[in-house]
Length: 200
Image (cartoon, rainbow, N blue to C red; front, side, top):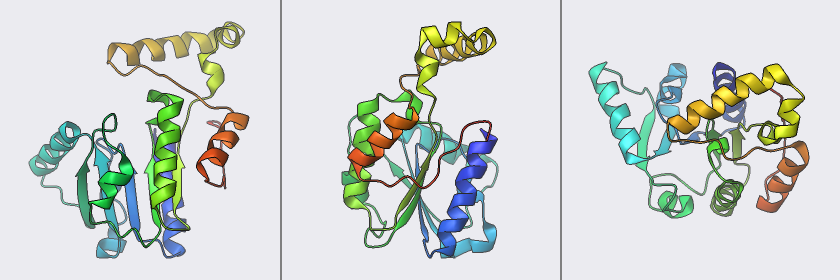
């Protein structure tokens, strides 16, 4: 979790050097991305997209701790199961004529592949050229019983993780391989710049 957060933050700083000043945090949850980079203060705008219930919890926790984002910070409520991201963004304060950096961490493996595809297509259709997205995904082999049986220690840990997420009402649904990632990005008209394994 810490590694993926750092990955997203470092890539945003590279995007900032390229002139990108808008950030979309998809499924932001309770992450602290909006409180980072105080030295950039009002030069960047952050748009957090998440379920309104989650956002209300976050706002209450921020208020209770006296936390205030140093940036132009916007909460955009969305029910990903019922609303299109493109429609929601069209009615927000984001400047769609300018590129954005998107961080989408800790989300894709809870979605069916068709929803991941739909999200990337929707973003690709509406965002300006040179926009970037960073997201993490699970190795699709972790959903394969034969693969897990051949790796007993890994199987033990992964089975626990699957059970934990199911009990929380958020079962793990999908993973990607190098070929399926390539096909996904080709279909949604994104270009792969970098991919890292967990060990890397």
